[in-house]
Length: 115
Length: 115
Image 1 (cartoon, helix red, strand yellow):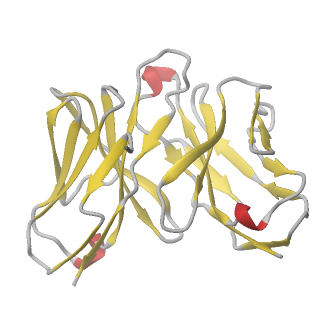
Image 2: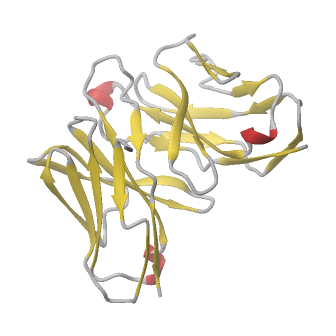
């Protein structure tokens, strides 16, 4: 089984709809992240969480919200989806081991299309 | 702020050719450096990493050396295969502040290997 899973893998939704993307991990890591990937722009950080009570905005948090329901679960919500949120979304985790370089482990991605 | 610049793609090579993908970075502290690879339809996988100056990361025939004096982390492989066709991302994680606020990615380089 994959260590970091994302649901759904693909989603098409309409402008103005609320949508939630879910991420679960079995790696036991405290730190979780949401990124979006756009062609030619690489990956950009949306939100990150150090633990259940610690959530932080990333580079491009406007229009998004998150919920850390448990150590293993981190959800991303689009309250009112708009077409320029069409992208590939990745969840990632990392451990707190000093010296590990804070390597991150990525889920398979969710392809979201907003029409 | 931190930034990563990598060569634009696509890069097209013949099988068994030598590969170099350039990556330079700007950071305020002492970052860890990573190369991630994304195969078609998949998430990102860590290819190699280096956590301090002069370290060499290596994996699957790929190598990259952390050059602090030139702020570079170029990816090399002596003889590429068709199966190396993918998008390659250079990334950094700042060590100051714990380095846990996410990775900063380059825009990605699409590598195409022709038989």
